[in-house]
Length: 244
Ligand SMILES: [Zn+2]
Image (cartoon, rainbow, N blue to C red; front, top):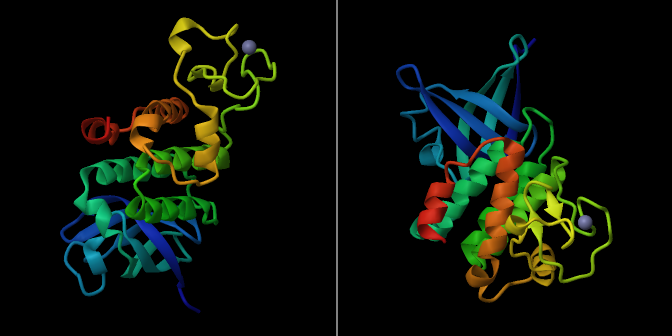
C-alpha cells in the first residue's frame, strides 16, 4: 500500500521560508485544497524539478505528495503554466500584486478543499497584467475575498440604523464595516465612496481615469480588510510609495 497520496493542482506561492541546508517550506494557495504548507526537498537548488524557483505571481502546476501517516505535504515537481511578466516590470502593478498576495494569504483558511481563493488571485494577476485600471482590480479582489469569508460590508442600507439609502450616498465607515447615512456618520467617517463607480467596478467594467477616481475607495477597502485581519498589511508600504 502506498504511504502517500499523490495529486496535481494549480497553485500560487504566497510565502517561502528556508529550511535546513537546501530545503524550503512554502505556503501555497491551491486550486484543490485551499491554503497549504508544503516542504520542498532541494527546493533552494533544483531548477530542474522546480521551475521558476517558487516565485510569486506565477501560476504553477504542482505535483504534491501527502503522507498518509503524518498528513504533511511535500512538493516533488513544479511547472510554471502562466507567467504574468508585466507585474515584475511595473512598480505600481508589483506593489498591488504583493498586497493582493498578502491579503489572500491572510484570509484563506488552511486546507479547506476548495479553490475559490486561487481563482480570485489568478484572475487578479491576469487582469492587472493586461489592464490599466489597476485600482479597480485591487478593490474587486478585496471585495471578493471579504464576501467569500463572510466579512462582506453592508452596501445597500445604513450599517448603523438600517435605513435604506438612496444611490449616491457617499459615506463609508471602517469602524461600522459598511456605508452609513449622514445622520449616523461622524465627521471623520466622511470617506469618499462613489456608488456608481463601485457598481461598475464590481461588474468588471473597464474604468477610465481609474487611479484618480478610485484611490480613496481603495484606501477604504484596504483599511476595512486590515481591520478584519487584525493587522496592517506589510505590502501597503510599497503601494503607498508607488501608487498613492
Ligand atoms: Zn443611519
